[in-house]
Image (cartoon, rainbow, N blue to C red):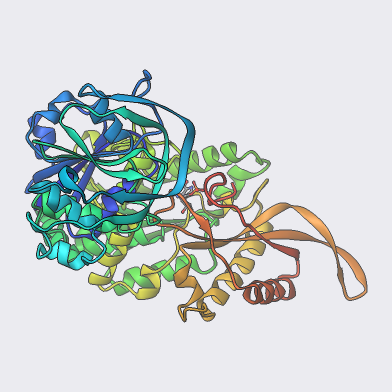
Length: 559
Ligand code: XMP
């Protein structure tokens, strides 16, 4: 399987580069930008062949101490390199060019023109790279390889690119040629005369860049010569073989949260191992969505689960949350109790020491928690599923199984479908580990959980029943939607009587992976009708608002 390695210098969009290339059918891995490129690191996942390296963007500048530097071996491997934004500036600074601050930061959509004249027309692999910019060539043709030509002459290609940079190249490094320039007059597309090295000042991974995927495809297929070889079907075969190999006849315990990830992990175990080997444990913390436990139980039993351990521990969780209103204190109380109950219940199962612990960890979980790549990536939240004494001990003993840890969320959904999981479960919106506790601001009580559960269930049911102007269910157009119970009451009238009801906020966002998010632009009519139904049905709610903040600067959850 061909692979592209991405060196991450801390850009918010590094993961998007990985996702876009995987969508093209080529496997990607992300490592911190300053990783020592030993032979073992370069060979990476068994069965993969490294074909090219991408140097990502970064919030830092190359001329400051914070700007991290790649292992200089990257320039001696003879592999194709693509520098994106900081990555390009890094290559320039590392080879005798000059990078300096711009008088004014460039941010947003900016036009770029590829020059067709004389020298700038390029040849050989430069031509193959420039194929990506040619508006007359489709993505399919580039992926198939049928558009990749060494000889075709380019026209003048202009397109809109998305940029975010405070520095620019003021002197190109020797050997580099400028092939494209931004409307603001700065170098935007570069290639080396002799080496297979390329640079872009803009971000092809961001959807606002016209032909972004084509440009990445031209690098991956045209320059690196990758074959399309990353498919979910192949991944399933590979993972099942390696699971059977590692686990043998030992028991496996999977901690299930009710979300898509752990359900898919459970399905993978059940389809690979004997049902008797697979123990599934699920904690009903009382902080779950309406009917969550029932839904999870049905889905897992349908997949053939034999040992499903449901732990009812609502009393314990609500007890631990009593009197707490600070979000971090609530998170800590939940995290600690999770660990206590987990250890107690696992001990109660009496599995032999040789058991394996499985988790539905995704590639992005490792990135966000700083375990995989994210030394540089901003630590936005702590996933309690990545570290607990039990998990750490099992990890040390080499007995952790994370069969989804190379996948992005949408890949997990695809895998879920292949494994025959119900479409409703596969399409389910993400739900945070600490559950409703992060959606009830201030102290959590059973009464508030019940109010929020009822309101949220109505909201979600409405989204499933309503169609967007494009004819899709609103629920499927939205990446994540939920209700939040605010810690304030506001005055209203019920009949002729003034009453104080709780204020509810509705949230709905669109996102690629939760790292950034835009507000879902609801048709007003839907919002009004949903609000009316909630206030008419859930008597304790007096007022409904809609959250119109994107991420950043807000986060998706309110906490
Ligand atoms: P934020 O609020 O950080 O959320 O913008 C990004 C995504 O992560 C989910 N989220 C969590 N998931 N444990 C989880 O498993 C958590 O502690 C947690 N906190 C937030 C959130 O729902 C959104 O999808």
